[in-house]
Image 1 (cartoon, helix red, strand yellow):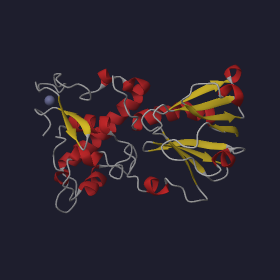
Image 2: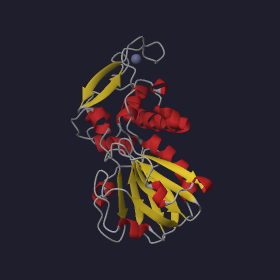
Image 3: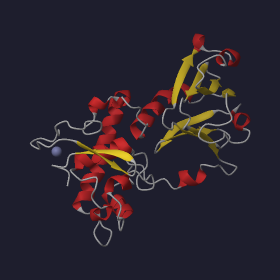
Length: 281
Ligand SMILES: [Zn+2]
């Protein structure tokens, strides 16, 4: 099957796996095998990380945020194919031995607790940057991120406000990280199916003329939260297309009780959308 780009649930699963291994440890060594991923690493990247203690590992949208005792924050994005490998104790390798490893192992963090965290990214659309004392390339994008969908600040009112007056298709609007952070191609399709809303619907129809939420916005905000929560609960298994409601299910019967429709695939803004024309209006 095609590679699936990580969205909020996949990034959250990664966070839950790497946080216990990294939190509280000091970064002893950072090995950079290249000068860049999607973008160049920031100046003096390794030097600004080495010797720093890790306070916390958090997530915002699809970004991982590693807070350091220097006050700076290491920002990481998995891109399309990024992943982390954790090696402990006896499996720990020296930087020299590490240099002979997988050619897609681009960044290796050696920690004071005996853990080695390796970032592997065959397609190199991943990103690492430092937010803090100096201007960072990612600062602007990061600051413009919309509400966190599982947070209290994201509800029907916030969604309606973000969609007011927007003429673009609802599915396309949901991919805009300024509307809601962390939702991508898969979970936009999933949430729209759950809410019974067509991906082709004009975004502005979810708000009244005054920008208040229509009933459809209430349904969609709740559906977004539910599909993300369910996917997080499934963790890694969420990568299996068999678990999705509509994603990668073209031609299959709709799962909505009593619907009888079949899932259709269309292209919107260059991306595949999966939906049921019978029950999504
Ligand atoms: Zn249906």
